[in-house]
Image (cartoon, rainbow, N blue to C red; front, side, top):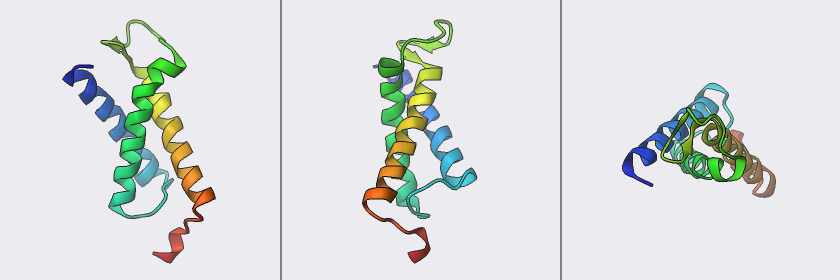
Length: 96
């Protein structure tokens, strides 16, 4: 992976985590550290997206980073992270 691929994945992760955290209000906690944890999970999901979901739309890629699978992988892993955190660690947002 080159630097441009990293930046593309970071942009996808930023977009997904910003939308889910601040627009949809889907988060573990309301603080900034929770947002950065979600950003990291979205980046990992985007990175794994092309490998797990597949290579969709050959015109929409950059050096093996396929944009749609990366976007879907970022959403999937971030949702999984938030749901597991809320379910198994009994995180309550109202306590803050």
